[in-house]
Amino acid sequence: MRFLGVGLVMLAAMFWGISGGIADILIERDWDPMVISFYRGAVGLLFFIVWFLLKLRGEHVRSRGLYIWSILAGIGVAGNFSFYFLSIEESSVAVAATLMYTAPIFVLLVSFILRIERSTWFKWGCIGGVLVGIFFLTGAYDFGELSVSLIGAAFGLAAGVSYALFIFGFKNASVIGQPQTTLTIAFLTFSIVLFAFMDRGQALSAATSSDFVWFILLGVIGAGLSFILYMIGLNRTTATTASVVAMVEPVTASVFGVAFMGDSLGLMQILGLVLILATVTLLSAKQSG
Image (cartoon, rainbow, N blue to C red; front, side, top):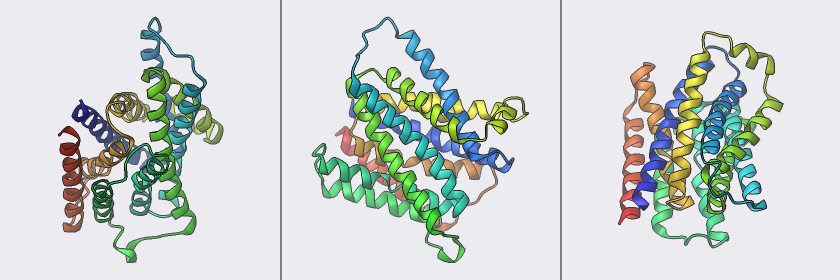
């Protein structure tokens, strides 16, 4: 059962990695990152509403806690998507990705403080291994090639904190209510938040552009399917494990870039990729044992 949870979270993260490649295509075509993020979440929301309506006759929990945690999860997703793209604009993909994937540290720290999970050397070792792998994979070690600003670093860390927030939000909400209810509330919150800050004129023009298929595909893969898998998997594993396993996302994004966008991987990047996969595999085996 625990292995199934890890597997579903991993599959969701792979979809997120692919969606990152699709988003990169749209950014290169001069679409605003906030508009891209909005469509990703809004299309996903349609999936969750349909899922919610199909389960409408089932038993539903009416709890203030469910709404609070779901809304916090939605704010976390909105912050994660937005701060990540803002960090890229202010610094670089390498810096943004490395800082965003500090999320497992925040998750473990909060879990330890609240005594939700036991702090073990094995968990810290897995987090350390993944962070080193991402450090190599993103090329963040090459300081001469990086463009780092204080605000870019702040946005990157904010993306990591937001990532941790949506993990805790979804995890706590899933204990109280059904996943389709949680996702519907969370992504309705997400859509409202993004709608308030994005370029609404460009969002309207996107709906009639030739790139609209890319926006739909991004929402289907990057939110609709992936978050359903993620919620089901998260309910079968711990928050710390989910945050570490989800780190296969940058690996998938890198493979997507090599396969479809003409990118190439150096020796250090390949080493980082292998280190991430090995750590996640070790953690998965430990969870299933």
